[in-house]
Amino acid sequence: MPLLDHFRPPLHPQRSWESFHARWATAIADTLDRTLPPRYFAEVHTRLGSQVEADIADFERPAEPSGNGPAAGVVFPAVFPDDFEVEVRDARDDARLVAVVELVSPANKDRPETRRAFAAKCAAYLQRGIGLVVVDIVTVQQFNLHNEMVAALKFGEAFAMPADPHLYAIAYRPARRQETNQIDVWPGTLTVGGTLPLLPLALRGTRAIPLDLEASYTDACQRSRL
Image (cartoon, rainbow, N blue to C red; front, side, top):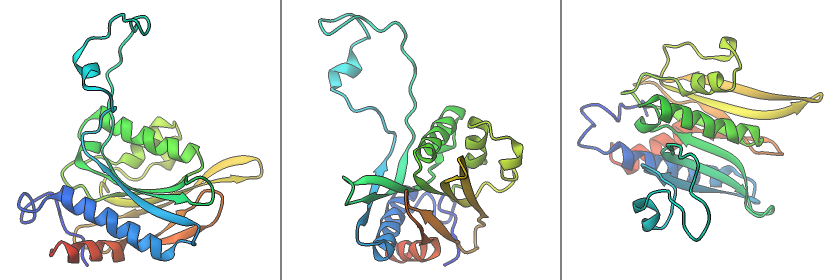
């Protein structure tokens, strides 16, 4: 199935990219559940315009002294990135998170603060040894979030992708070799009208499994009647 542009006509705005992303995430989870060893399972998590969950009164009243403690000395603005992700968990280890597939949304790329928030989330997964795949098919925002993460981690320009490809799929595998922490990276450029790659999805503490993005994308398109 050739990659479609879900963010511009003729698909957009008649067909919702949010609905497609949710369906694609489900197709990825279904594909993984057919491939994963029996002890692992995949779950879909989608959340738009996310925020910290709290009692509604906490949003309405200012940060002021109360019977529960002193007033905050400083209040930071907070940005929480959209989530369109598939999580792989280990049923034998208290459902520990071992791998994540992230589908990038326009809101992950539209402002410097949301790009930093997404990069920080991905970096946190890698620092915990969790395998990660990021898929970016957003055509309306010309930013590369891999490069955002490289800059945040201060890896240097040698580890960045070329500035031009803003559509890509990239796999990361944290590893420990000869007393050194490393991250194996498999970058792939995507193009509208092209096919999607087969990438390794690393499971923390064990091997990687193949993630067939083309098969899951085709399944999602067929279910969406695209």
